[in-house]
Each structure stands twice: as C-alpha cells, then as structure tokens.
Amino acid sequence: MLDQILRRTSEFLDEMPKSVRKKKGQFFTSRETAAFMASLFDTENLSGTVTALDPGAGTGILSAALIDRLVSENRVSDIQLVCYENDSDVLPLLRENLEYLKQNSSVKIDYKINEENYILSQSNDFEGTLFAKKNPEKYDLIIGNPPYLRIMRKSEEAESMPTVVHGAPNLYFLFAAMSLFNLKDDAEMVYIIPRSWTSGEYFKAFRNYFLYYGRLMQIHLFVSRDKVFSQESVLQETMIIKVKKTDVTPDKVVISSTQTNNDFGDIKSIGVPYDAVVNGDNLYVYLPTNDEDVRVIQVVNKYQKTLPDEGLKMHTGIVVDFRQWNELKKEPGKHTLPLFYSQNIRNGRVNHNPSGKEYDWIVDSVPGLIQKNKNYVFCKRFTAKEEKRRLQCGIYLAHDFPEYRFIGTQNKINYVDRTDKKEMSLPLTYGIFALLNSTLFDKFYRILNGSTQVNSTEINNIPVPPVEDIEEIGEQLIEADDLSTETCDSIMMGVSYNG
Image (cartoon, rainbow, N blue to C red):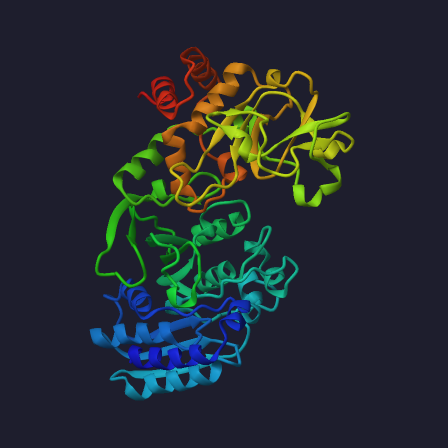
C-alpha cells in the first residue's frame, strides 16, 4: 500500500513546482524514512481499535507507512485515522490515497480528513481558554512531518500558542507541541523535525513544555544533512524523535544514526543516560553518538556554574558592516578606529593585519558602534562544516593597540567580556581562551549544536570551572608561552578536570 501511495505522490511532485511547495514549508517524506518512522512505535500493547493522527498529512505517506506496519503485525482490528490537511493542491490526492488504503487493507479503516488549520482549530484547547472543549480528542499514535516554515511573531498561529513561543517561531515546533497535547497518556508520537529546537533561547519555551509533558525515548540523526529530503534538495539538520507522553523519565535514550535516509539497514545506536541528553536549566538536548561523546558531556557537567555566573559573558560583535557603510573607512585617519573581523583571528591571537575586507576602519563618532579597548577573547561566529574545529578563538590584548581608547567589532565574531565592564586580567583572558580552545569544549559544543554557527547564548550556558581555576589555567598558559590546543588541553585538564 505504501508503494502505491508513493507512486502517486511522485506523479504529484512532477507536476507541482518545488518553489511553490517551499513557500509552504512542504517537503515530502521518502519511503525509507516513512517506514523507519512507523517502525519506531511500541505496538505490543495495542489491540482492538487504535486511533491515529497524521497532522499536516500531505499525500498520506506517513499514514500509509503506519497502516502498513499495523496491518502486517495483525494486532489490531480497526484503525481510526484522522488527517489534518488544508492545502487545496494536495487534498484531492490525499482523499484518493486514504480511500485506496481503506479499500485495500485487511484491517477495517475509518478515516477523516480535517481541512481546518491544525494549530488554530485547537489553540483554545491547548491554552485552556474559556472556549476549550471539556474532552478534546486524544490519540494512541501520532506520526508527523510538519511544515518547516518560519512565521512572524505576530502571526495567528504564534499568537494562538503563547505557552511555547518565545522569539522567532517556526511552524514545526508549534505542530510538535500540539501533537504532544493530542496524545493520550503513555502514548507515543514520532516526528521528523529540524535539529534547531535542541538548544538556543528562541526554543526555550517550547522545550520547557515539550520536555515537561513528554520524554524522549529515541533520537535518530542523519550524518549527511543533504540526504534526508534528497528528492527535495533540502539542506537541513534533521532528526527523527520518538516521544512518550509521560512524567516517568527513562534511564536511557536511544541515540541512533545513519548516513542518509536510505540506509536504515546500517543503523548505529547507543543507549545514553537521560540526564546526559537533557540537561541544565535551559533543558538543552545533547546528541552524543558514541561513548566518547557521553564522557565529554559528563566531564563538562562536573561543574554547575556558567560564564555569567562567574561574572563573564560572551557577546556578539556590534558592527553590521553592510548596514553601516557611511561609518566605515578604507584607511586609518583622524577619528577612525580599527574594526576587527573574524579574519583577524589567527593562531590564537588577534591582530589588525588587512582582513581581506574592503573596510578595516570605522569612525569614532557613533557611540553605539564602538566599545572600549580592553582585553577580550574573540571567537568566530561562523566556520565551514568541514573545518576541524567549531570554536576558533583568539586573545585580544588592549596593550597591542595602545593608541586607541575604543575599537569596533564586526558581528561575525563573538567576544567575552566581564559583566561589570571592568577589564579582564591577563590570566583570566588567557584562561578563558584555554577553555574555548580546548578539545573538550569544542567537542561539547559540537554535541550541543550541529550547525556551523557559534551562538553566544549557548556558550554562556556551558558549565565552566570557578573563576579562580580559570585564572590559574591562564597563568600556566602564559608561562608555557604556547597557545596550541594540546597545551590548553594539558593545562586545563590538570587544573580543573583531573578528578
């Protein structure tokens, strides 16, 4: 049955321009991915009538995969399927496909297509307003590939679910939160979604809800991010999650992975302690794929305090150069200051050699674009996927530029400063550099964030040793006169991570 649905979907894709579907955030699931997602459900206790939900059903690929699985196991006698879909282009094919499933299944199938907006039609129930139903419908199984689409903070969908929205919303996490709400207690949902929700401030409200009412049971990762929706040419860090609606935390989470979406016969998996996956006040979700990754998480989490707790903070550079052309200069002169780019971070230090940019200087007349010339640790915000390190840092020392009271930092770098705005001491500056330049912190950050962007909010939430330890590390690094990662590793592990 699934193959027939996929054949019809392929014909639909040939006729529907990809640009049209992209505007809707609409990407269709491959056969292998759909079958794998359906295989993740624990169906041992299912019998008789089973209720299933496919929100954002598209052409019904995931519904077909789930029905194929349930029929093949011969455990249930009746499947009651509800699909949400309001795309008029897709609806005719969805109706044909669900009718095909009904007519060709050995198990009784009753289906309903709900053409309402999945989010708006249930927002009162979700938020518990005066208009909420007393007994909203709940389901035994939910399988979903939600739309991946950023929406405005003032959009109807975002404003209808304020419990889970903070900052810039995306439809995919609104769908995921609503689906968890739609589950029966102790029931499971399987979703394929982007990885971005696992960390960062924008997703904090969603994580607080999602990981309070549900527990992660399995996370499946794709090593090659361009091979998940390969037919769609989508470059996206994507994952499959299995979540159970329960307040009972499992001992372990299964973290599995494959290279692509068509090699599920070669799955690598590891059982990871739950508190090594979901950790900290911000409920970041870490994604270790081997025992070494688990060890890294446990070693870093030896400490509880963060940079802000120790009076330090990473910020993002101030100058957005393409918006400030009038303030930028090609040459030094009166009332101009050096502007630093990520290209000025070289071999652990920060210089002001030509960056390769057109403008290496900025005027001193706009206070909001400049900062005091004092000791900092700079860190590149963006690196290439294939680069060996994600955290690439350099020590900036004020005495290297004694002729300037102020400097400029372009916003493709981050910088660490004291929260009281006083200058960091030399040992403290070197110590912070050693932490960020270490193998331990680089590995930890890669486990936390799969993207190539270094997010200052995430760095500010990494546990760090006490500031006294950081200064001791810095003093030893100054004495060693060697900024290599190997030296940073040796000193840092000896001072702070030797027990």
